[in-house]
Length: 116
Image (cartoon, rainbow, N blue to C red; front, side, top):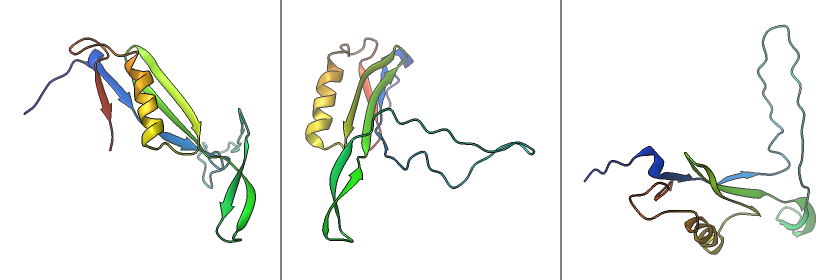
């Protein structure tokens, strides 16, 4: 069974992660004759205590952040950023917040699209 949705009904969600190494890339592309450069900006830096399996002890490291936006033709409907990864409870909390900005089907912003 195939259903056709209007573009204004669709709300897309997808998780992305970043940490202190996200901006560090081994490769760059620039036109011939120009110099490659990198400018890193860290908005917030939170130290976490994490477990190092190599040392079998606790050590300081920097957190990994997960961002989960809900995007539609109307813009960003809902956004959540957490330290660490999403689990079932934090994802359900995100969906609860998103539903406050959704409309009943078949109205605009009424269909959630996600990747599994």
